[in-house]
Image 1 (cartoon, rainbow, N blue to C red):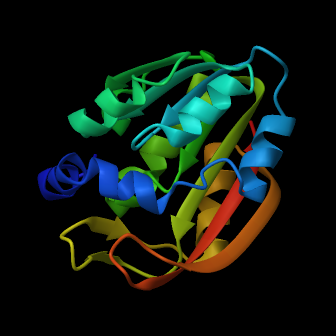
Image 2: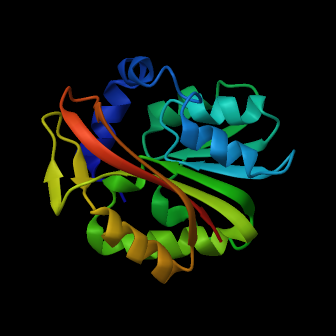
Length: 196
């Protein structure tokens, strides 16, 4: 679960955040995720933000459900054609074999470290056999709050891979990089595409 302050930051800055991620859908992890799905696959965008990735997933022909804990983000995502968006938290994911793919791109990094294994297990359970799971996180250690007041949990690559293996995922492809975040600070990151 994201804390109230983190959710408030996103609720208050929907359009500013959308401008920062305007190139959503152009990243190699997104193309790899789409390429691994069959036409018409059911996809959950978990922590969808303003819905730019969800919109691109729908445009690519997938059946898209999008969740975000910030009401304003979910409302904006719901404006995209073909996207069924609603306000929901990570712990609301209780389905079994409901999705062919889960896109959790830089969203689960707002969950406390103690809750992270449970969220991964829920994602694994919610996927159909051989379903795809995409996760992106900032690399580092511990938990912290950025200058905007957003809560973050950080992971080292090997630590993240161990968590994924424990949840039952098989990593397929990894990407790393360093970009300037919404708070204006440079941040190293890792993204991993997994198979259930």
